[in-house]
Each structure stands twice: as C-alpha cells, then as structure tokens.
Length: 435
Image (cartoon, rainbow, N blue to C red; front, side, top):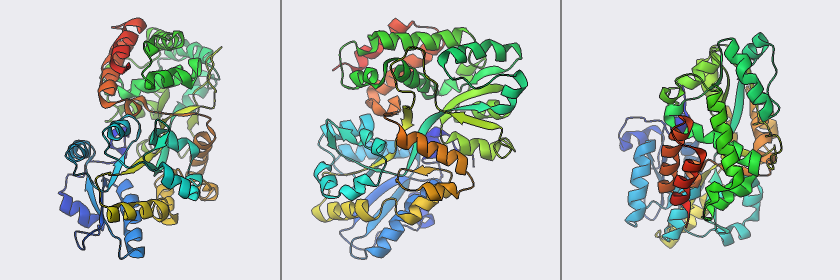
C-alpha cells in the first residue's frame, strides 16, 4: 500500500468505528473506570498501536485501556470538538507543537514535567530531540511515542551517473546542478506543489542552514517582524532563485503529493532529486519496481548553504508522535494513562513492529534491530540523522498554531509561483504569528 505524509499515520479505512475496533482487537466497552484512548487507523501503523494496547491490557487486568480508531481528517475534527466540550479521551494522540500549545493554554492537558522527573528512565530511553514538540514554555505536556520522520534529500543514482555528476555538497552545488539536468531534459527536483506542505520543507531547511534554528525560534516566540529577519529574507530569496532557474519540475503547482506523483517522477528518472520525508522510502520501495532493491535510490541530509550559520547536521520533520493526558479525566484514568506511558509505550514488541514496517522508533538502543532489518542501510541512516542532530525542527505546519499554519500554506503557494515577493510573504506571516 503506497503511503503519503498526510495518510501515513492514518489511512482512511472507510469502515465504522465498531468494525475498526473489532479489526484491531480493541478491549471493547467492557468494565468500568478504564482509560480511553483515540488514535488513527490504517495499516500497518494501526497494528503497532493496537498491539501496544492489547499487550498493556493483558498485563493490567484491573486497569484497562479502551481504544477507538478514526480516519485522519475525521480524527482532527472529532478530537478538537471533544476537547473543547471537556469530553476528550483520557489519552490524546497528536503531533505536538502548535496544536499542543493551544490545548495547554486552554488548560485541557496535564503537565507531565514532574512525572518525567520521577520517571527519568522513561525520558532517557527516548530520542532527546523528540521532547521539543512536547514542551510548552519549558514544561512537558506530552509523551513522545512511535517513530521519527526526518525530511531527507533523495536522489536517483542512475540519473546522476547518466549526466556524469555527483550529489550536491553545498547550496552552490545545488544551483550548479540545475542547468546540467535541465540540459538533458531531466527535472532537477520533483515537487508535489499543489499539496503546499511539500514547499514548506524547502523553507524549513533554508531558514536553518542560513540563519540557524534561532530564526524560526523567534517566529515561534511571536517576536515582532521575525519573518523579516535578514536571514529569513535570504532564505525566501534563495528558494525563488531556484524556482526562476527551473529547479523544479514543470507544472509542480498542479502535482499532488497524496497521489504520489512526485515520487514517481524520481523513481522513473524524470527528476533527479526530491526533498521528502522518511516515509518516502517505503513508497518508492512499494511502487518503484526494482528502484530501491537495485540500490538506485540515494539519500542524504540537506547540504549546507555557503556562509550559513546553521549546523549541517540539523534536521527537520516529525520528531515523533505524541500522547497527552486530558486534564478533565478522573484520577483513576490518569493513573492508568501514566502506567501506559511507563510500561506500555514502545515496548519490545511494538518497537519491532515499527521497524518491520520500515520505520525508526524513537527508542534509543535499537541499533542491532535496525541492522538486522531488510531495510538496514536506510533505517540506520535515519536513526543516526535523527539521534545525532543537535536540532530537530518540527514541521512548521505542525509547530505553528492551526490558524498561522493555514496562513503559511496559503502564502507559500504564492511564493513558489512567484506571485509575491519575499518581503510580501514576510509581512503576511508577521501578521499571523506576532503576539
């Protein structure tokens, strides 16, 4: 099954919740006083989540978790409504970042800072970079869980060999490769620009490589005119220079990422490179024939920008997924949820399931399991990238508040279509993010 970013963590199963529950072996409605837990459906991810709940329930007959699964978009609507009405499940699954901040500011989720202080072994067993998106104003409000998904620069080795060039080691190299590929009728970069969030990945890296993480941190803190910082304007200018140089496939603004058309351009040799998430590997493996198995797929971290301030080891993407506890839950439900965090999340069986699915769990010490996987090289690369990064920036459309994220997505399409200038983009975003 081909998986794209918006569906990777929960494909539309198109079945009633009761059927979904039966399919994943839910504990069902039996027994009183248990904790409730909502999460996304769709295989193979649902199997890992449901398996963790089943194992916990077997080990805790007196403290059960009742799970319910939802399609991705339906979940976002349902959880927002439930939290607003004070009827959230005990355990709230999410992406952290800006949405978590809105929950915190409304007093809807538990502060877990002291709990992590008392359970330091839990925190020390997870990627340190996973805690950024779980933290609001220095306090921890969510348990990082599941897998890490950094954004990776993929390239087609066959195309590079055909043109007689090597992967870029700097932004200067990137720009120098553009005319070389165009001269051979090959798009330098594939891009599903109609989906808009795909464009955001370019700015995430350019902001970091040029100005370092401090530039976006100022935006997150609501600093006035933060988007107009000289390094931000430089990053916005660089991406437009790439567009003007025909760096992206023609018609990119009408290509959707959810259809995986951008992936096909890479593995079919119509494009030389593509910036995309770790989930892309599985899509290309499933859909690209022998592209991955033959060793034709190359991957690397985004290159540094000449004279930039950002550490070239930094990455961006989804540092983890996140579980919070509803502040409206009863004492017994909260106790069960915390026990699940301590002894039910990313245990051995769940960890192995994620690895078998071609993913890298955020649990430290899995090197041997990754090395034994059929996708060992890629998984070890992803593990090293994510675990060693000094800074792992969360995807901006998750890091920002929902309203600011929509302003970002609307304006980034105009930026890539050259309909607005970097300065106009900055002014629009300053108005949406300044406090």
